[in-house]
Image (spheres, rainbow, N blue to C red):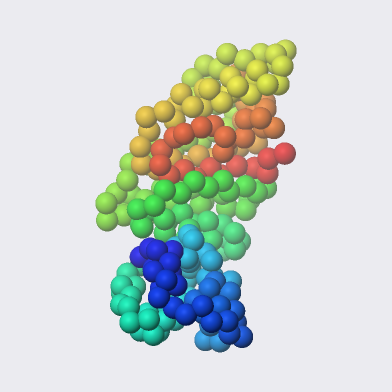
Length: 233
């Protein structure tokens, strides 16, 4: 469902009357209406702009928009059924941010949307487990996507190919050479890319120049990418 287009259509047929919650049909008004129903007011913008929200909040917002549509003599399309990703038992033990990353990434894949995500944290918080479960679930989709998984630790030349970089070179030169090696591997890949980056990783004996070669800046790769890495400085 295109929430933004639906809302634009409704606003064009609603009177611009200001009420206690704001102009009828505005985002602020919708937040007040959600709050009055016991739903999450903060979910309105996520649902409208990103199509992300719990089934309960999505249903509540759809009901509110349906009432506005009836007032304006319009018909609202039915709310499509979205299967909520079920968390594997192991992931229930992870922190809230990792559980949210799993749900958002898999939910986007199920909806056919492109998603790119970087998950960071210290050792032992479940980054590797997250990557493993995303790989498993991507293969179980109704239309399975090709999955490429890269584990980058130690000398990453074994995975990315020989990197022509020297410790004596300027940091900017090192960073560009490292980024080029990564982009060479990513070019032409399709489906889903899952990358696990270890803090001990190095490029031909040279540590990653993280200030200029953060994994999220490696350039275009597959449509959907999740990078799990240590805390980058």
